[in-house]
Length: 128
Image 1: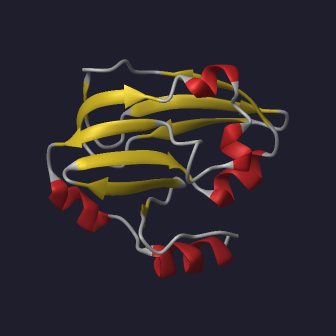
Image 2: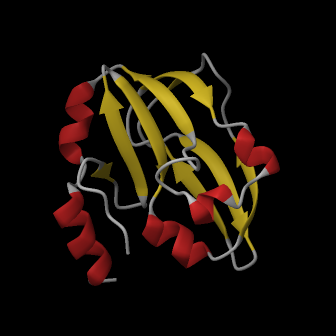
């Protein structure tokens, strides 16, 4: 299982990377592996919307299950990865690069303190 060191993680299997106040959000390698072959992504939000940590970002459907993805941080949505509408399988092949879900202008960076680092997330996944 791939768990990049430079990201923060949430127990619901989302990752976040913040650079210059902008959070890029996606699902983890653990999540995509658990889902298996992703066949559909439906976004629950649009750019310019204000969201809170815990709000629904998207629903991901696979051949095995459907999963809701939630925001790990609050802020204003700058972009959603519309490429996933036509190529949802990017979530399986590139969960940390081309398979990102949204970019958000973070409104409260202290929320990042509630998330796990890579070692904590890796240990959390080992216990599941």
